[in-house]
Length: 251
View: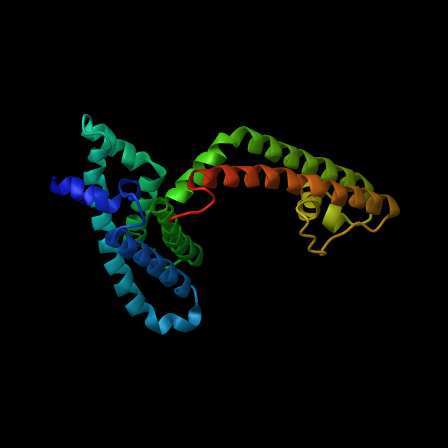
């Protein structure tokens, strides 16, 4: 068996009948370490460790760079009859883009250190956690099950947005003059509508007039359906995803 195929078997979880290869386990540990570093770098009290963090980031950048090159090379095994098409498919795939972001996050560093730019770079580094998705066949099956229900989930999203708009508009007319800071416009009232319909209820804004409270109660009752409908669809998707494994998961 060729070196490329052996490396492909080590890097592609789907090429193995059970579990993950040692190489993928080490790469998964590197991703978790990179995420931990990105989190710790946001803590000002750890600024004295900036040099150590940078050195570790550089080392992880080399690891992820080599991984990207290796995955690009072995992706030709997916379609041996058209290797360059297979490689291009990997480059533009979500997994390939996540790999590329992992490499670029080490190369990009804001000169002058604008606070916002620094946070954006750190956020880009945290995106590397998305690379973990490729290491689980169960995640692939769940993603496929969710994709099969995309139309139902899109309808749920549309209904939720409609409910937010209706509730925000109603409270704008009823409470706008009484509480202009909270309900003086439909966008302002939308914050209350989102918090209510998602059953979060922060309590920072709330209706005070009798009619406003009545409409708020109706919105709270409507929130049961807004939350329950997509929850049922997701539960059915997850159930379908684990059926091939007889209710258990190996990864």
